[in-house]
Image 1 (cartoon, rainbow, N blue to C red):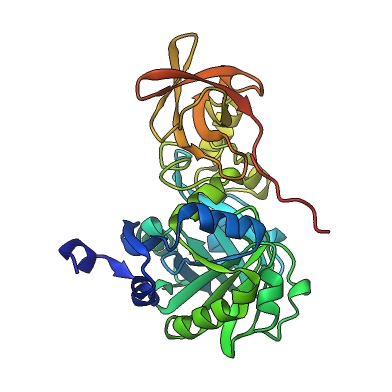
Image 2: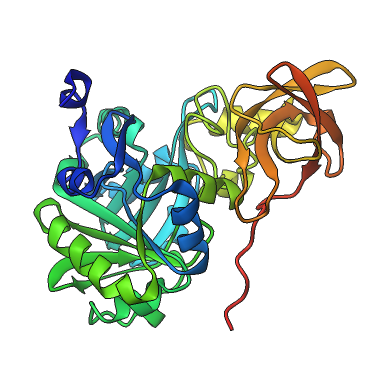
Length: 369
């Protein structure tokens, strides 16, 4: 075992992944599988059948007790008043200047009980930020006691149905239900980060191995594959989802990142509101757009974007889309070059390659049936 690996956090399934021959890498301070068979094979499994991801590196922060709602309304950009018990909401944490500290999911699990699912690399910072503003509200870091599995793909519901008494058809998008999976207590949610239907399964840390193995066994006849971070990254890119450290950072506001629909100025005061309101009135100087390459070449993070031989932005994420068969990217560009159909150039290894601004998501799953 390499020295660097010893310093990384390990999920409850790390040893299972290693025994399965997964290629492991550092990600957000964790030792994670980037692929099991191949990124392409795992990607196609999710789009056509199903894939199973270990995402236990994600941070989980519980906020509970009287005052929990008021605290989170003050910290998050979206309006928690819209949440029913058992419902989830995409939202953001911002600084006073409107810069994005993190993007996350907020689950309302009870009258005064919320679960925040945050990015792995930001989990400790997010916890400290929330705790600093808590003013007596109970804030608990559940990250190292909570395992999280993501079963994604068109066959996900039929695979999971045989392992849980939860009526999965009643768990609508951005909803969650508590029950059992493979006989283990679990919270089952339906949000997804791949552009496909699927479920997230929250479990006690020590129950993850048994449930992982039962899911793979139950899905074997339907072509279920374990999948790693490599497939997950391209799946989320095709679906147009932001990734912190690429499309999101303290440098970019939700307005820059085209996430304004998750900012509820009308709900009243929250951290960053005044700065975001000013930015909205002035209009953003740059905005996140989708790019589809016309010329051959694979755009990567940091590659310069040009218009008429002048730098106007940079790629945030990019790659060759297995589903579409073309290279795609998300990039920050000056606002005047953001309209759909705008012609731009990406410098790939110093060579200009033509691209066009397109709408996101790049891929939408076909309707059922």
